[in-house]
Image (cartoon, rainbow, N blue to C red):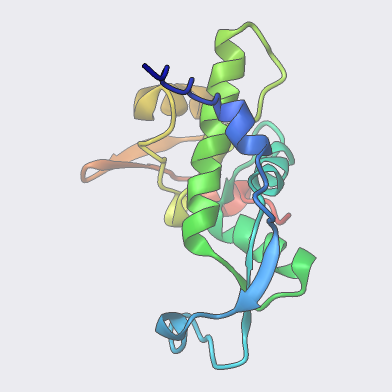
Length: 162
């Protein structure tokens, strides 16, 4: 009987570049959205690139997925950066950081400083909304509940450009 494969750690997944990054034509279904047109290009980033962008955010500051995507598109000379893979790789980075923290590492990617557009806290991050809220407030941010979501109120003043 064959033994099941062991699961790869989040850190291993973060380092698995799978021939990424690569710049491709913008897919037809995206043309017309966000001002994209035929002939525009899109970078599909490597997971580690997303993690590196997240590590650039200092205490007391935040960044959104949109700023990370803009910086990666610029880095690769593309019109835009793939929103889906960037979002997935942000989660890889967050889970890898949590994995490292559980093993006693202290110099981890500050994933709680990477927000969804509009300053929304990502409820899928390790520790959930409550942990992120506590970490962000500990760095001087004001976090409030808006409907069922939590947002960073001082987004404009705290946002950095990568």
